[in-house]
Amino acid sequence: MTTYSLEVIGTIRSELKRREDAPLFYDEGAPNAYLEILPQYTDALHRMRVDDEIIVVIWLHRASRDVLQVHPRGNRSNPLTGVFSTRSPDRPNPLGLHRTKVLEIGPGGLQIGPIEAIDGTPVVDIKPVVGSDDH
Amino acid sequence: MTTYSLEVIGTIRSELKRREDAPLFYDEGAPNAYLEILPQYTDALHRMRVDDEIIVVIWLHRASRDVLQVHPRGNRSNPLTGVFSTRSPDRPNPLGLHRTKVLEIGPGGLQIGPIEAIDGTPVVDIKPVVGSDDH
Image (cartoon, rainbow over all chains, first blue to last red; front, side):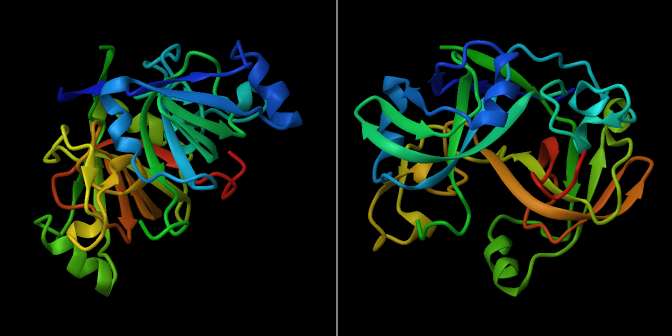
């Protein structure tokens, strides 16, 4: 089996402290959060701008990686579905994609929001939303 | 430094053989491709349907992971920009996101397209496009 090594480039700092809280906040509107970037990666933020639309790629480090099928949204009345057709955090590579906006830019990270990711979530990449900018 | 292990779940089979060919095809419209899924992960395709819009998450295994700033699109007249504000394949974690459509579903993979990814590219996740489906 081929594997690659993913390096953590930053961490989400949020008032959302537990995975169970996320659905509640999702209904009510997710909070803003701080994306703390490790010092060795801050040069990769150069020329990022307030109001940029970005995709924050996270690693769901508490997910179960051996789950291949789930009942979507944890509801047993939903038929068992392959995880590649769902947004389940439990999947072989528990990557999560969060589309959000840059609110403030500091020397060590970004204020972003809204975003559903919980406090302490590792971040592995940041990408501009395709078509939102001419970078 | 915290690292996680990413497992390859499949491979792109495409007529696009070289990275240099991709921009040409991009202008002309990218080709369709076959996404071959490793046998131990095919159960995760259950209930995927033709015409589903998906995001294929690839690992750009030939990218340079120590690059933090680039001239966008390789054009030196574009100012040096942090890779987190660009779609450069060269970045700390060379993940690529390709939005595409399911054209056919076989026992060992998916016919998908159009997609710019080159032949042999490792695939690490497949996700439904948010809002495109009620999964």
